[in-house]
Length: 282
Ligand code: F3S
Image (tube, rainbow, N blue to C red; front, top):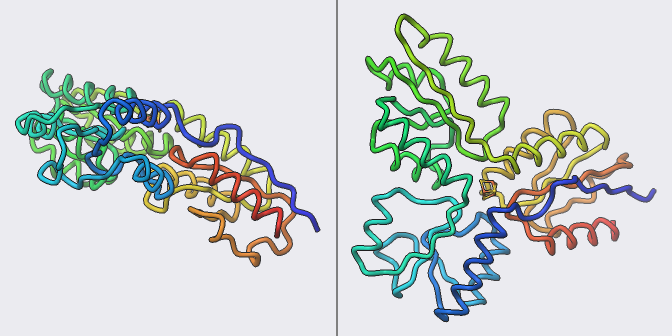
């Protein structure tokens, strides 16, 4: 039986990734070679393509060999920016405007006397960057209990989210904090810093998942937003996260008529087309 395949409405690169790639392309035209501080995006195919175009990854500031370095769309802390400048390296800033909003929100909350709580994955570069903007008066976590321990005697709590988290989970986290921290004279300020593209992408992927027998979510295995998308789809249908077409297993499709396709925000259109072509063969 022939598989019927439907793509989610929001698919392929998000605005922030497209913007970062455009900035880098222009920079390579001007400077010949550019290094990015950390991976520009969490997608192997995109990184290989960038490498061919003369864009290499430096893992930390000390590793930067040239005199031009790009900050990735995930952004960095002000300390890292200063460290780069101290080495007289020109900065090409591709920080996504949505991430910048979260950084500025954290900075303002700290200036206004709040202890900042970032709902996010502690090891993710975006979260590390936002923590830096909150000048140490902050905590990144997804566990309400950790907030209780870290906030100490602080009665003013500012809560924001990593841009790529699942909105419903953020809301649940905020409710959990309100339950224990909203006591006499306490003040809780919540800033919604979830990226609008992520909201739309998650909503349209979930709508599609509800209409099909199986979902394929295409994107980097280490991409936070792709993993969240797969997690959401898996709650309603069998869902597989794949990075490339050759990861498809024919056995997944037994008894399956309709397949939905969604992608992370750094998945190139080419990879999506390769997966569609492989599905045709199946
Ligand atoms: Fe920016 Fe949202 Fe993409 S934060 S990099 S537009 S996923």
